[in-house]
Image 1 (cartoon, rainbow, N blue to C red):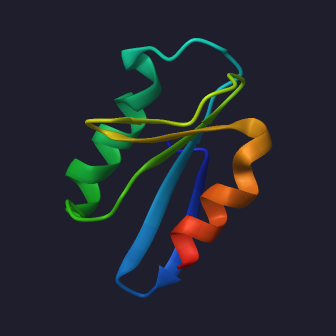
Image 2 (image 1 turned 30 degrees about the vertical axis):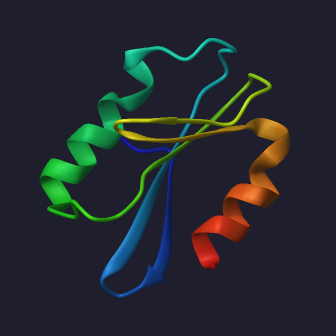
Length: 78
């Protein structure tokens, strides 16, 4: 289950997971990993929005603080 998908084009669907926790854990990426396997979109970046304060990059996706959502959308659509 993914909380949100952003359709950039017919072939580019960007998954976004939304978490209420302030501490990043491996569980944040479970849905994103499943999405990549099911959709076979290995070259599409995955995103997490969370209640923390820092933007981070991890192996399975990019993490944005909830109040940096605009920055995340600008990155996705650039």
